[in-house]
Image 1 (cartoon, rainbow, N blue to C red):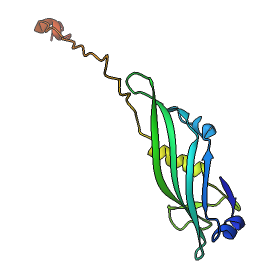
Image 2: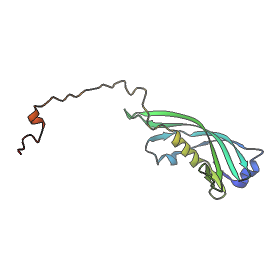
Image 3: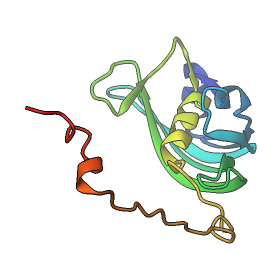
Image 4: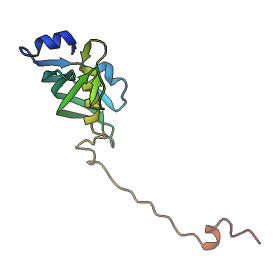
Length: 155
């Protein structure tokens, strides 16, 4: 969702709460681990701080990712629900302040970044080990002369 800076300043005292559904299909193309993304339910509120001018968004996100099982490659649904705080400002005092692009603030790319941080590195289906069997390989010991390929070389 996008807001302009004047719009945020005007709404800061009357309507500083928001809720919307975001579709992240365009962002998903960059990640091979995620097979599908459900529409994300995003809700939260914002504050406008004056000195220095900052825009603080407290956001809760609920989304379901579909990832491949690390063992069977079956589709596994991964529900994510988390809360985060995003701080935007014109001056970058530290790494916690996100830059404002022009006069608009677009939350979606930053929320997608938070989803990428929250997603697990790998997932395993609950039925991944149902048909799992372990086979042990044994190596027969060769005679010492044939085991060493350099044994036939003479000094």
